[in-house]
Length: 73
Image (cartoon, rainbow, N blue to C red; front, side, top):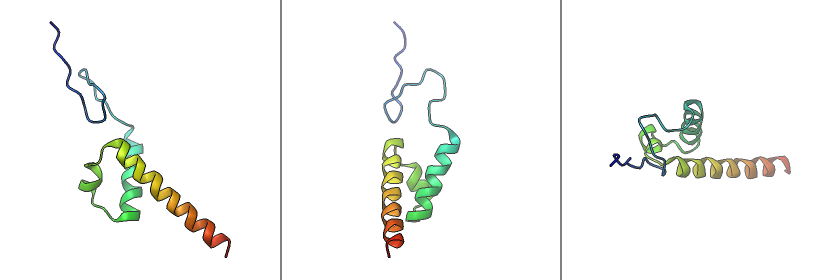
């Protein structure tokens, strides 16, 4: 019987290969959240990818509303 593969965070499965997201994208997400919320690298990296993306999207929406409010003044 073949060995079962253990799930990796986020629901992906690894078969001896590195499973993840592009490193440049990860650095950009981490920098974005750290810049706006001043969270530590450790705290940001502890988030699952989907959760980190939700924070990035939320920060982007906040920035967009603030920029629109400034433009309309």
